[in-house]
Length: 481
Ligand code: NOJ
Image (tube, rainbow, N blue to C red; front, side, top):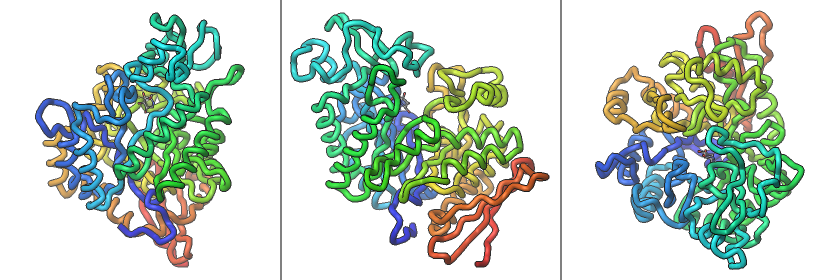
């Protein structure tokens, strides 16, 4: 892959979210694993992937797909071993791919030894590791994220005789970031994995680290101060280990996660604000709302900040950032029968687009042409199905059908092969990928047409990307400077 001398690896990379449990079963026990990942690294490399993001594979009761961690220094035995993970990192690197993993800092599993100790011995060394209170009155009004299952963010613990705070399932108690030892622990966990060769971290649920009475307990200044500390820690010890924020927050709040030139925080943020605009533009055939959001997200980025643009991931397609009216429209367009669960839609990309390959190619081409590092979701390269009848988010986490993948790879006309050639072509034009971005004015008679120019920062090349949300035509046009 061509990387420009002044560009960091993650600024031009295409990421692939690999959900280990469902990707490839290497040992035949019906559960995806690291042996399976090792078998299929060549598949990813051939597809044209630059970086793999692994959601949590730590030891876990799997109450929340692994986002409930019981040991941060162990791999869940169902996936394999740490040695196998190190082998994945080594082989991925040999193929020119980077490896990013989840760092879940906001909460642990209730089965983590820290929580066991904390509930048993309030005066002991782990007594303050979690957020405890004598009653459940504190932080009133804080929204409940998993509102379908959790009646409250507080749960009573019989052993300790107090309530503990949790923003997600009650089996995921929140860590107490006011406790200095918690900071030391999480920095040491980041070191543990960085020393194993991991190239970057996705920061799960990062807005929720701190609580303060009288606020909404999201994106508090203390959280940003902690991120400055984490960024500084990594920069002191390693080179170019980026942090990618998962912050489903309005644009102004989201931009703050990049930090400032003097106090940098995350290098990358998932582009939640723009994600729903792709789907809306497809239905309204009007590019203007997409443009308004794109101007706002790409317009004021600090130097070196990168958006991770995406269409789908392992969660519901969240409608959290939309006005009630816009959320209602999305529901009518995309989930008329299933409805919305926990504020999102339980569908995968291809079914959302009615398996219309023209729409799929058009939206994917747009995703790949925008500034930032796109992130694809495993299986979307073969138009994977979903199963909305399954509970929670299992609906969008089905096992990847490898017979279908093999057929797609072998078929020169498949979406897989179109995507692969598009990804390889993208790699050949890194100056455009990281270059300047300018949206061209929309013709009032043709609101369905979006055009933007990418110009290499060295001034050597420019091209205009055009997409018509009505006809679904799209393409690049070279511009002579
Ligand atoms: C966001 C993750 O993407 C989601 O899967 C998880 O349930 C929550 N954070 C809690 O960790």
